[in-house]
Amino acid sequence: MDYENQLLLTAFKLFLSNNYEKVTIEMIEKESGITRKTLYRHLGSKDNVFIKVCDKYIFDTQNIEKKISASPDMSLHDFILSYVAGVNATMVKMLSLSIVNIYKNYFFFIMQAGAYYPGFKERIVALNMSEYKCWRHVLVNAVKSKEIKSNIDIDAVATQFRCVFLGMAFEHSLTYGLNTDMLLSTYLTIYNQIKK
Image 1: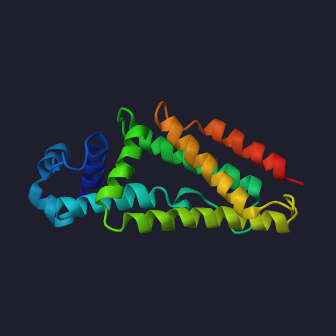
Image 2: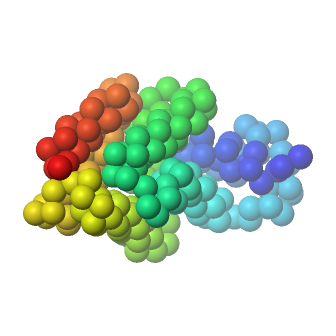
Image 3: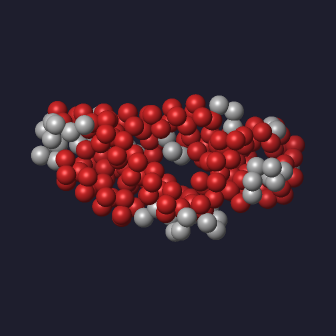
């Protein structure tokens, strides 16, 4: 049995539904059905559990290299399709957890990580910068291949793609979750404005 992943999933669900302070080792033990001894052997303290949950469900889940399959020579159009498909796949995984208000709770969980995860600010900045650089790289290649206009401000457009996703993800988390059809439509509108 994969105790560590079962424990991390159980802890993640608890951290989504409660704040960090309310979640106890006893709660994780009870919800997972795994003994405290096994829990400590695999994950250690509550702080360590929280760190490992954040690593898996924030930093791994939101890592663009793990979220999408992109090749270095991919067109911007194909990258957009792959990006939205990756976002959609992530959302399907989250929905499969059967947690009420999963998207709103996920944003709350990220805010908790900002308060309790050591070095969170540096890690989240690096994660965001990695995604920005990915968008920028694809845009540079799209200019070189003459897929898009050469007179665009690549940095501004890369930021625009990132901000559209982040803004829509946050706004829609307060209701039913990100509408990936709307995200794709918005991305394709931007694309059509800059394509040759």
